[in-house]
Length: 266
Image (tube, rainbow, N blue to C red; front, top):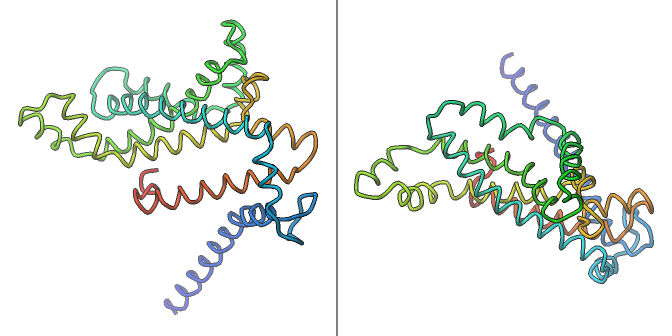
């Protein structure tokens, strides 16, 4: 009786997992296959196969420009997030100072509050400072929403690190800065890579904050895509670009999981 019950439970659980995978992967499959359709409009399943929309995406100055802005912005935001987040996480995980809980709460606050709230607040501040619509303003906004991810990931990495390893290096004559650079950082290298990847993706995919902050000169790809969808509907060029981005993310994600076991650090 017990074996039969366990078999039923396992069967139901397997069905739930299978349905979850279908729900998650079905949009990706539809997007990728539809990007190779040779028709004039978005449709699935494809009735003919062609690379015409990938070629059109490469030739489109507007999309190339917005992709360049998003890539540049996400790269800068990721670099700053990793540096600031790593230092803050190290202080929170290893330091013992009054008010550390308050500092942690402030650093992680953007994870809990809706992005629309941050966007409206930043818009008001930027209007007062006169930097609304500028790249520095857009960068600060993206750093604000990406640093908490880096802090969260690196805090988990530093908390799992054996402090005796650093103490051993110091006892052998290494200065704290040298021990941090040559012992601590190599041991949390996978966390650094994961922090950079997550920060890059969060910045690259942001629509809400960028819609409020970005000016006419610094239009990111998600904002341009959202504008095109609202005005002209689903453009096959955006489908092709989206499929390419999804494919790159999947490849990098699988590589990161295989090399660094990213899922165990989240």
